[in-house]
Amino acid sequence: MLEIASEGIATGTTSQPKEHPMAHLVSIDDVDMRYGGADGTLAVSGLTMRVGKGDFAAVVGPSGCGKSTLMKLVTGLHIPQVGTVIVAGQHVTQPISIVGMAFQNPTMLPWRTTLENILLPLEIVEKHRHRLRANKKEYIEKAEHLLELVGLKGFGAKFPWQLSGGMQQRANLCRALIHEPELLMLDEPFGALDAFTREELWCVIRDLHAAQGVTIVLVTHDLREAAFLADKIFVMSARPGRILKEHRVPFERPRDLEIMYESRFNDLVHQLHGEIAQARVTA
Ligand SMILES: Nc1ncnc2c1ncn2[C@@H]1O[C@H](COP(=O)(O)OP(=O)(O)OP(=O)(O)O)[C@@H](O)[C@H]1O
Ligand SMILES: [Mg+2]
Image 1 (spheres, rainbow, N blue to C red):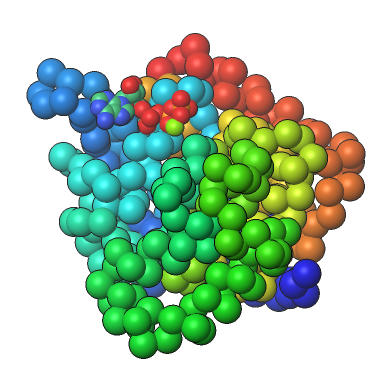
Image 2 (cartoon, rainbow, N blue to C red; image 1 turned 60 degrees about the vertical axis):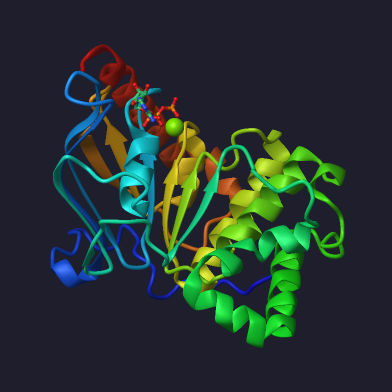
């Protein structure tokens, strides 16, 4: 397992979020995104949020409020009709390459081994393609290291259909990380897992964040997951989604799963629950 380095990670000891624009890896400003033309569905409206470099941000909100839309706007899979999305100082106008993505349903190619699936992003992104050809052995070692990190040592040669759902989720995370993204976007990646596997993967993600300083945006319906992992929690309104509230999570790092039995943890989860319940009835 990785050693956990707690320095450099924002905690509740800093009371004011940094406002200097260079400190933000992600800036979304007054964004509207409508699907299906002028009469279509307005998914998000007046959406403004910022994520600092190295931060772990969680996004929670009612079902259908535009969370996955937000993820697609940041990664450049959708371009908004109104407002701006800036990632790493660049205006997002097309899919960006500094990002790793993992979504709820792992979409592994069944005809490729797990290891070959993990290497896939390197084949797709132009700048990595040359590096992969030149340093294939090095990348295979890296993929094997990631597999070990998520508890899948030795499973690289198996096909995805030979893995359980939880194992596929783990492999999915390796694929999101293989190109060492600066930004990791996770859209309910643990949704389909049993409680124990989910907690195990929370710890994997927590340690990755601590050790590699990657910036993470996690969409989740699980408020305990958000409170355990994140430095900041953004609560969204019902559709059209916008940010209603930003919480700074005050728990020191490194965090242990035991924290979830403390009253301060339950108080935060309770508060978030109340805000989302309220958001569901008021658009
Ligand atoms: N490609 C699309 N075309 C048309 N409408 C869409 C598309 N994607 C999303 N929508 C609509 O936009 C709204 C927001 O969807 P989105 O998937 O962003 O919500 P969500 O918060 O991720 O929901 P959930 O919590 O269920 O995952 C919904 O009303 C949805 O029907
Ligand atoms: Mg979604």
